[in-house]
Image 1: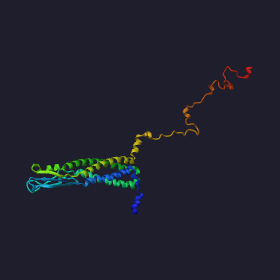
Image 2: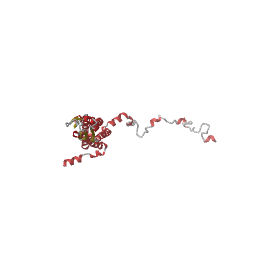
Image 3: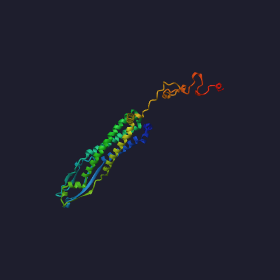
Image 4: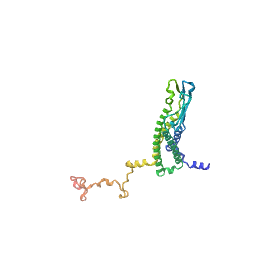
Length: 291
């Protein structure tokens, strides 16, 4: 118990408040629902064959099938209406490859999500150190996104084939006795395939979850920052102007004035020869001249 308390104390459970950890928990749950609804399925349908000779009839023919849906190995006994011995018939189709592939992806997604959650809780600092952990997580997440898309699409096609092969009307066509009008064949109970429909829905939900999680894992890799640094040079800081050659207290913009110095010697005669000529040439220069 102390070990558990210590692990809980050292864990960083705040990661579940972030999209990175929260979506990973959703992936874990949806992976369980996807492979469990498909892998645990078992269905049954019932038919009745009423022969002209009632003693040869079979009013309750059960056909059971389930995962991995190797329907060509599923058999049932149907009356021939020509004698007491029944005839053994087999269903048509083999959809085991798509079903097993779907379940396998679900199981591996469940295991990887559980491992990733453990890393987020106890090794988050090492996960972000050097971005290598995040980069590996991104690559694996991208692979699972693609695998979920392929497996869900394949299983959706396989499920449509299973529904067609287990349709009571299709099975009635396999019974030779039902080709004669004097014999009456009808379905009693159709197979319930709502669980299989749910598995396909969960499969495509996993595609959305894993594809959406790519963005949040990408933000942890550091690749976005490297991309921005390469293609956005305008965001870089410009170097400060070099003012090492300017004296203390000097105006750094003095050099931009092109060395302008006003020449007072050209204004109205100036102070040449020590005389005061600022009043112009026609003006008296002393009070004695006025006398």
